[in-house]
Image (cartoon, rainbow, N blue to C red; front, side, top):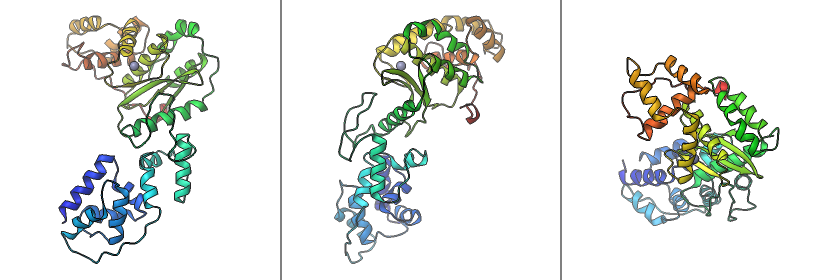
Length: 348
Ligand SMILES: [Zn+2]
């Protein structure tokens, strides 16, 4: 096995978060063939040497050739390889493999059509133009933020499809925000969405792509607020806590788009969490409840009692405990609650 070639290829793919199928797509070659080369079971052909130098512009044909020569030295007779360079370059603009897997890209058959799809997705006329992002990202691809940019663009697209019922009115929202929290039971996600649209807030959930660690974002699209969640943890308690945190940003009248990752540590996040703290049980109160319980662990029934006392969902209490443990405001052990409800597709 040609270990050097394998290691070089593996590192090159990992650095870009590409998979073997992504490389196969760029090279327009069968997955199996590329996998054989990747694993060192098949030698590089002269054409592939040229293609790899185009896919990885920081390398040369000679570089790949030297790796291959460790095994044997076939006659080098480079072909011209149209399209490969263009296909590879498009990966600098959009993580095409994951985006296709999620069905976010319109269909294409040729590299021209693929380029058009990528431009449409990014809202640019041609590759080379600078995409603009409502979430305030800057910089032209290639850059390290490509997955975040992709997520942000998808959020913009989804939010623009939403039809809010009323115009957003901050005064009305500040009075009625707790109505949303009251609906935060495991079966009422749709009800919450309705309440948000009624208050003029667009809502969407968009899958986390490329492990960005994004929990959600508050974004202003055409001057109206919108909340987007990733459902990254797939747990209801975290879902509600993130939603509550983003509502707090809106209540605090944070006018700039705001992305939440875990853990967040900006000043705005601190203020939002402080606001959430006014709606939800405090660390001291929860510590007292835990202390009083015979087992040192809050049962579902105990969580329900706390939820009723504060007029909020039991999911929010569980999410609050998780947050306080993660931020060191409650000790990490023992595990206070086993209240982890997986978010199923049926309620999304
Ligand atoms: Zn935040």
